[in-house]
Figure 1 (cartoon, one colour):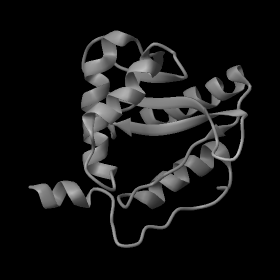
Figure 2 (spheres, helix red, strand yellow):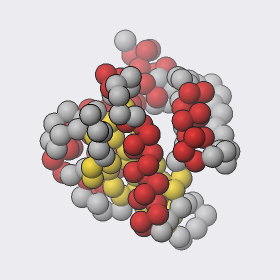
Figure 3 (cartoon, helix red, strand yellow):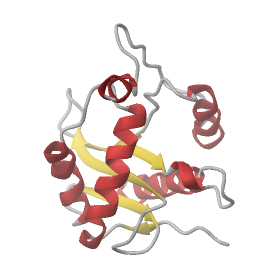
Figure 4 (cartoon, helix red, strand yellow):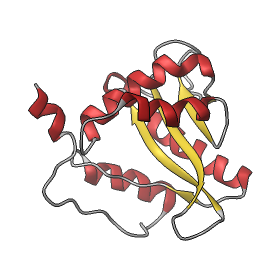
Length: 161
């Protein structure tokens, strides 16, 4: 089966919200605000200052997605393509097709098509080493790193249970 990334549409809002909440439960540093998530997702599904790469049926359950926004970095007026999230539903992580790799390639293509630098990274306390290896295969050496003090991603979700 060939896994294809398509451009997300407004019909994907429920699937994107479900994936986003799952991503926050696994990798979020603090509890998510669904309204803030929607404020990033909805315009991107309309290709308004962003784009969504989606794997799965239009309007159905998404297997994986990437949320990209166009915005200036804090010190510049020039736009960059900034990744907000890359997430593969746990049900599909071991399935054939390389969903995470396909989403990364989607982001690289979008960056080149828009002629904007892509800012993409990993902020996760779970399986970080394997994620770094994946990104290094696609992007080469990293251009920095993140550290967390007094917190761990996904910890808020465990405390809420």
